[in-house]
Image 1: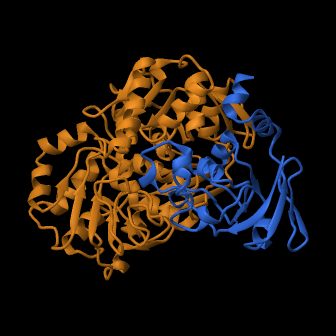
Image 2: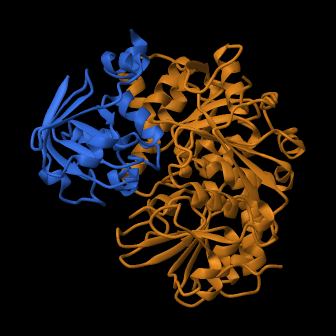
Image 3: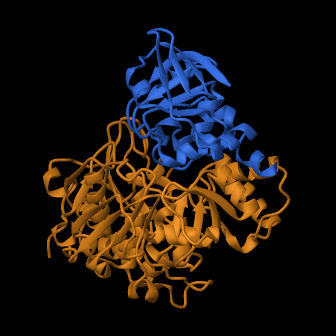
Length: 160
Length: 419
């Protein structure tokens, strides 16, 4: 499994309220919600993102609410992966449970620039910045979590 | 090596003699919770995965609280979906309009959570129940669906930070000032993935409402859970209230903590979190030039009876400043009724405030007090992120009920009087 695309870069503490504002949470329709992905921090994101693009952010990405709508809209609007220095714990859990690939890698998150072309190999955790020629290695997930991802999410893993 | 209080509860629910930080476990759940925003997503996942029944109809709580009484047609559809699921599966703890309250005020009040429990909830403030000595943590809707189907959840056993509380609070301060001070000290990811365990001689001076407020905002420091030891205050609160027998767990004397932070409660001052992160704290006294347009007193953080009482003491016989909209939201129907019986609601209305039935409403920018561009609100809620209460260019300042009520009278951020 891998993704390749251009980078959108965000700061520390990107919260779930800017990822998907609660004023839209009167529906659980992922397609409709995804029109508002990142709206309060980057109103251009939805217009500019192409399938496979990569979000790169600082510490504590996804802090705040437990709304699963947050990783869901990021995934639904085509984002291939989120790389951050760290993730808030509920977002981390939710991303795994719904099958949005996420990677923790401090150096990559620090050095990769907005607009760079990046490819990510989820099996090895290797992140390649094709624009700068640098490569990074993210921490692999524990085996237990890898099994959830391989099954295609938590509920599918339970059904096995 | 000894275990923390959280680790002991997790070990017991995983059927293990002991656990250690970092270990992945599967634990039995005493309660699985969801609200009108997160339950519809969970129900869709539950049905899509082909589960026919819930693991235990008495161990699931569904509370309609975010957008009820329904704010619009779409919200009404979501409530309807929750209602139909609750009915189809005979969910015994289903709280609809008339019975509902803000989930994290309601479930402790109704005795649905108790000491020693292991609880997940599809709401980030589920960490509130640590106040009664439970392990309780927020998760997403898929975890809720899995929990409803299997009665279990996976956890990575958390390490812990111990907060050693000393002495007692000045009269003008409450639990909110304690937790805002702590978040200001350690930051919004200062306890990421960890437990916040509150201990020390100062614990006994904190009321249950103070403890519920403190644990409620553990998530705002990134924590997995916040937890208080079970003492006489807890026992008095739980006695005659809870459905299940409380089970008391105690940290081992040699439990391992990543760090110990000492908090002298007598040195706490009225504290405010400035936009746009809960860690941007300042003493309220340094913010007296900040003019406000709105005051919100309520939420799962501060909509309890002591919060109403603190507001009443300040607002009674006074007038909300011209140009300030003061919105007061008791968190449950029982608190609402108690406010009526004690005369608080008449006093609030006479002061120029409005009083709503229980709802999360404005806290998350849903309805019942949305801010326009450039407006400022001082609120007893829990988050002040960009756009949290409305327009992306509006601002939220987080404070205690006493500070919020004092500010309502002056129109500027105002620390409550010291006596």
